[in-house]
Amino acid sequence: WRAVLRKFCGLSRRADRRSNVRRLNRKYTGIHPGVERGYSSSIAVYIDQSGSVGNSELELAFGELRNLARRAEFTTFHFDTAVDEKSETEWRRGKTPATGRTRCGGTDFSCVTKHANKNAGRFDGYIIITDGEAAKPGISRLKRGWLLVPGTNLLFDADNRDFVMKMKPAAKA
Image (cartoon, rainbow, N blue to C red; front, side):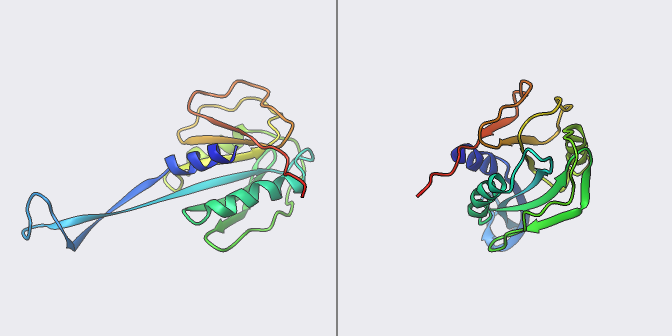
């Protein structure tokens, strides 16, 4: 599941293009400035706040996302039947957000998909950390990743574009 998560974050990259005088244009050298590209990804992480997702599972997922935060920028949101926009937290290199709870209800994935589609200009993809026990959401405009806690499955068939990652319990030392 860790390799699939790294692959999801790597494929969700955006190329920012800007002119640079020092970089040469291959076709018109010295006449026009060259182009410099910066590759980075901005990914939304939606955290299921239902009672079936425990803090130990969230810490396991956050441990792997902490490693990926060197190359990607994460924005976390909490959700149950609605997305809590007040819980929005920017997560960049060297910082880890708290795993506290702000909601306690059922689970509805359609609110997550609507929120992600509404913010499609901000994010390159989104990850849903959940147990997968809810109805199938609608079609997503962005890449969607399902990060399932250990011992759970999705109750529906995922779309072809979706990434499904099933976490395994942490090995005890």
